[in-house]
Every structure is written in structure tokens, then in C-alpha cells.
Image (cartoon, rainbow, N blue to C red):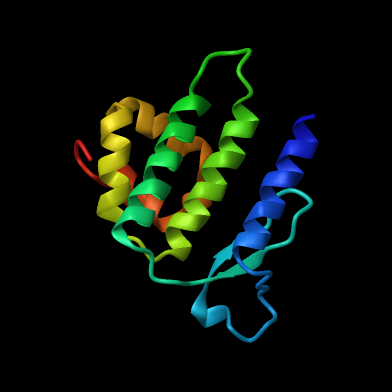
Length: 136
């Protein structure tokens, strides 16, 4: 069940990205999603998101991040995949990091954010930036 949900969610990322790939010559026009397990890296085309889309992406990400912290027997892997999908959408929409910071600050304490960031390496530089922000 867990593998099939992961495959479905990652397929949604591919479809949301219109099937872009790092080899299509548009790598400089997209957000590259790093390789994840058996799934190859891919490039998702960039589009300017509306403020509403950016807030929705950030809110969905923050909900998944909060759910990731649920104690066992929660299915943290699924919440991590959901967070990754939402983060990819957020980045592909070229949203301002302040929107994500605001959504996270409404749901997570500083310690919870640090715990999430320790497991969400896919966030790259933005994750490091959020982790350095005092009181974010």
C-alpha cells in the first residue's frame, strides 16, 4: 500500500510538471526535483503562481509537515511524500519563501520545524534558510 501511494503521488508530480525532464533542454527554465529512491530526477516547468496558489501550496505543505510529526503508528512516509509534492508545486510556482515561512509558523513551533527539516532534505537551500531564521 505504501509503495503504491508513493508511486501515485510521484506520478502526480510528473503530471503536474507536464512531463518535463532534465534532458529536454529547458533545465534552466524549471525546478529540478532530485532523484528519490527508484524515481529519477526530473525538471518541473516554472510558472508564476498567483498569491492564492502560493498560499494553497504553502498551507498544504505545512499540513503535511505537521502530520509527518505524528507519533507512531502514523504513516510518516506518506506525509513526507505529500510534503515533497506540495514543496515541488510551491517551487514550480516561483512563490516567495515568506509565504511558506508564514504558513509553517502558524502550524509548527521552532523545534518542530527543525525536526521536520532534519528529514526533509529535498528542501535544499530553502530548508537551510528556514532553519537559520530566528523564530522564523
